[in-house]
Amino acid sequence: MSNLLKRIKNERGSQLIEFLAVFPLIIFAFLLIWQMAMAAYTVVVSEAAARDGARVASVEGDYQTAVERSAYGLDVTSSLITGSSSYGKEVTVIVHAKMPMISIPFVGKLDYTIDADATIPVIEENDD
Image 1 (spheres, rainbow, N blue to C red):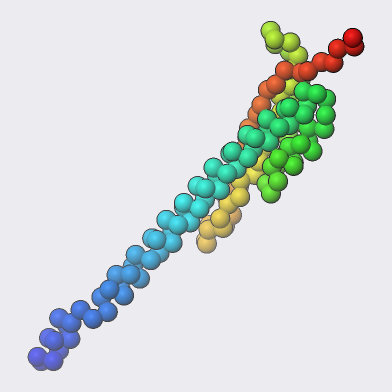
Image 2: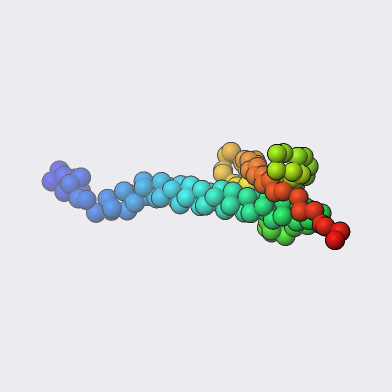
Protein backbone atom coordinates (compact mmCIF):
# COMPACT_ATOMS: atom_id res chain seq x y z
CA MET A 1 0.00 0.00 0.00
CA SER A 2 2.80 2.45 0.84
CA ASN A 3 4.41 1.67 -2.54
CA LEU A 4 1.18 2.68 -4.27
CA LEU A 5 1.01 5.96 -2.32
CA LYS A 6 4.61 6.75 -3.30
CA ARG A 7 3.74 6.30 -6.98
CA ILE A 8 0.64 8.49 -6.73
CA LYS A 9 2.60 11.31 -5.06
CA ASN A 10 5.45 11.01 -7.57
CA GLU A 11 5.44 13.97 -10.00
CA ARG A 12 7.88 12.50 -12.50
CA GLY A 13 6.74 13.19 -16.05
CA SER A 14 4.27 15.92 -15.11
CA GLN A 15 6.25 18.52 -17.07
CA LEU A 16 5.98 16.41 -20.21
CA ILE A 17 2.22 16.09 -19.81
CA GLU A 18 1.87 19.85 -19.26
CA PHE A 19 4.00 20.53 -22.33
CA LEU A 20 1.88 18.18 -24.44
CA ALA A 21 -1.24 19.97 -23.28
CA VAL A 22 0.13 23.42 -24.20
CA PHE A 23 1.98 22.47 -27.42
CA PRO A 24 -1.11 22.57 -29.72
CA LEU A 25 -1.87 26.09 -28.46
CA ILE A 26 1.69 27.18 -29.26
CA ILE A 27 1.40 25.79 -32.80
CA PHE A 28 -2.01 27.41 -33.26
CA ALA A 29 -0.63 30.79 -32.11
CA PHE A 30 2.29 30.49 -34.53
CA LEU A 31 -0.04 29.67 -37.44
CA LEU A 32 -2.33 32.57 -36.53
CA ILE A 33 0.60 35.01 -36.48
CA TRP A 34 1.83 33.64 -39.83
CA GLN A 35 -1.63 34.04 -41.37
CA MET A 36 -1.87 37.63 -40.14
CA ALA A 37 1.53 38.35 -41.69
CA MET A 38 0.35 36.92 -45.03
CA ALA A 39 -2.80 39.06 -44.87
CA ALA A 40 -0.77 42.20 -44.17
CA TYR A 41 1.61 41.33 -47.02
CA THR A 42 -1.32 40.88 -49.41
CA VAL A 43 -2.83 44.24 -48.44
CA VAL A 44 0.45 46.13 -48.86
CA VAL A 45 1.35 44.48 -52.17
CA SER A 46 -2.13 44.86 -53.68
CA GLU A 47 -2.23 48.57 -52.79
CA ALA A 48 1.21 49.08 -54.33
CA ALA A 49 0.14 47.16 -57.44
CA ALA A 50 -2.95 49.36 -57.80
CA ARG A 51 -0.81 52.51 -57.57
CA ASP A 52 1.70 51.16 -60.10
CA GLY A 53 -1.08 50.17 -62.47
CA ALA A 54 -2.73 53.57 -62.17
CA ARG A 55 0.57 55.34 -62.90
CA VAL A 56 1.06 53.29 -66.05
CA ALA A 57 -2.58 53.71 -67.10
CA SER A 58 -2.32 57.50 -66.69
CA VAL A 59 0.20 57.60 -69.54
CA GLU A 60 -1.86 55.07 -71.56
CA GLY A 61 0.45 52.11 -70.95
CA ASP A 62 -0.25 48.42 -70.32
CA TYR A 63 -1.55 48.65 -66.76
CA GLN A 64 -2.32 44.92 -66.42
CA THR A 65 1.32 43.97 -66.96
CA ALA A 66 2.39 46.60 -64.44
CA VAL A 67 -0.05 45.22 -61.86
CA GLU A 68 1.07 41.62 -62.42
CA ARG A 69 4.75 42.56 -62.15
CA SER A 70 4.18 44.64 -59.04
CA ALA A 71 2.17 41.89 -57.32
CA TYR A 72 4.56 39.08 -58.22
CA GLY A 73 3.68 35.92 -56.33
CA LEU A 74 0.02 36.79 -55.76
CA ASP A 75 -2.98 35.75 -57.81
CA VAL A 76 -4.32 39.13 -58.98
CA THR A 77 -6.87 40.48 -61.42
CA SER A 78 -7.26 44.12 -62.30
CA SER A 79 -9.72 46.42 -63.99
CA LEU A 80 -9.58 49.98 -65.29
CA ILE A 81 -12.16 52.74 -64.87
CA THR A 82 -11.78 56.05 -66.67
CA GLY A 83 -13.69 59.13 -65.68
CA SER A 84 -13.45 62.80 -65.02
CA SER A 85 -13.61 65.02 -61.99
CA SER A 86 -13.16 68.67 -61.24
CA TYR A 87 -9.43 68.14 -61.77
CA GLY A 88 -9.83 66.69 -65.28
CA LYS A 89 -9.63 63.19 -66.69
CA GLU A 90 -8.51 60.46 -64.34
CA VAL A 91 -8.05 56.69 -64.26
CA THR A 92 -8.80 54.26 -61.47
CA VAL A 93 -7.21 50.82 -61.31
CA ILE A 94 -8.90 48.23 -59.09
CA VAL A 95 -6.87 45.20 -58.02
CA HIS A 96 -8.40 42.01 -56.62
CA ALA A 97 -5.73 39.89 -54.90
CA LYS A 98 -6.40 36.40 -53.62
CA MET A 99 -4.96 36.11 -50.11
CA PRO A 100 -2.74 33.05 -49.51
CA MET A 101 -4.25 30.98 -46.73
CA ILE A 102 -2.89 28.28 -44.46
CA SER A 103 -4.71 25.00 -44.94
CA ILE A 104 -6.50 24.19 -41.69
CA PRO A 105 -7.13 20.49 -40.96
CA PHE A 106 -10.79 19.49 -40.97
CA VAL A 107 -11.74 22.92 -42.38
CA GLY A 108 -9.81 23.04 -45.64
CA LYS A 109 -8.62 26.11 -47.46
CA LEU A 110 -10.53 29.32 -46.99
CA ASP A 111 -10.87 31.81 -49.84
CA TYR A 112 -10.48 35.54 -49.23
CA THR A 113 -9.94 38.38 -51.68
CA ILE A 114 -8.35 41.73 -50.89
CA ASP A 115 -9.47 44.69 -53.02
CA ALA A 116 -7.36 47.79 -53.54
CA ASP A 117 -7.80 50.77 -55.84
CA ALA A 118 -5.84 53.84 -56.87
CA THR A 119 -6.94 56.93 -58.80
CA ILE A 120 -4.48 59.15 -60.68
CA PRO A 121 -5.06 62.06 -63.10
CA VAL A 122 -4.40 61.32 -66.76
CA ILE A 123 -1.26 62.92 -68.12
CA GLU A 124 -2.07 64.36 -71.50
CA GLU A 125 0.65 65.04 -74.03
CA ASN A 126 0.92 68.54 -75.43
CA ASP A 127 1.44 68.84 -79.18
CA ASP A 128 3.58 71.99 -78.96
